[in-house]
Length: 336
Image 1 (tube, one colour):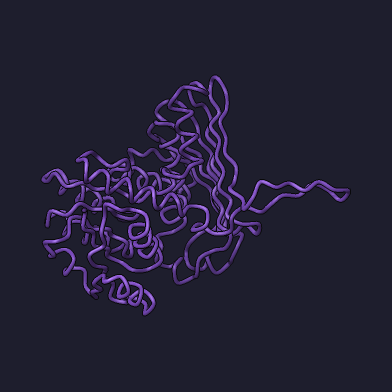
Image 2 (cartoon, rainbow, N blue to C red; image 1 turned 90 degrees about the vertical axis):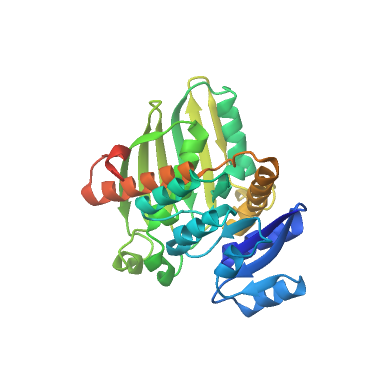
């Protein structure tokens, strides 16, 4: 039985706690820490005899705990991750590892000194639709990838308080799509060109961010990708992708409550996409933590490494630089 401590009991910490408790039979949550833990979370833990702490050091220093899940605010990720690694704990860290490239490299340097495992929380790799695209590409069913298109649009923008600390659209939102582009093609990104605008909420612009973006990527393989992001899609959570290759095309549509289509004299209608990311991706969250626990049990590398976390942040940084300087930016310019 793998004993787990969760650091951070906000929305994503609660998601991972429920996934582990209800679905991963080979793991046991020993403790959860958060200095501002909500009363309902404290009650949830107490009902299940799971210890609750304010500070994370109680978890890091607990000899019973084998693995730590870092679900705290981004600015605390590297400090906690490094402390856990030094304590000999396996680490699952939510994305991004850090907004600072040097901090990510410090984590990677610490990992080189120890056999502990480290997984980054890019849950969309575990989604049934995106996995099907990757499997089709990896099996050669569409030949060599030429063009990738990814659409990622939220139903509503986050709060302004969140926007001010999120690191911006590229680091907070599009980072999933940057990782997905690498995942789907199996190739590394070499150059980024991004343009953006404030079309959803002027207050987001006043906070120094954008809410709408189109980013193009050039891969080492020669393939190209186009990613479009918006903070608001009135019809729901819009998550689509396609990979066009030398022998064909693979594409995925949105998940909907049902596949029913009604045809009548006034037109043809179907269901809207699932509205929120927890509805759309809940199974993928369960699958990623299951994979993390399985990797610990088997002693095999996790599917999403610190290197993958670094590459996604490098792309996000390049996108930000491209937006500010209105030019293509090579990844080799970032983090040097």
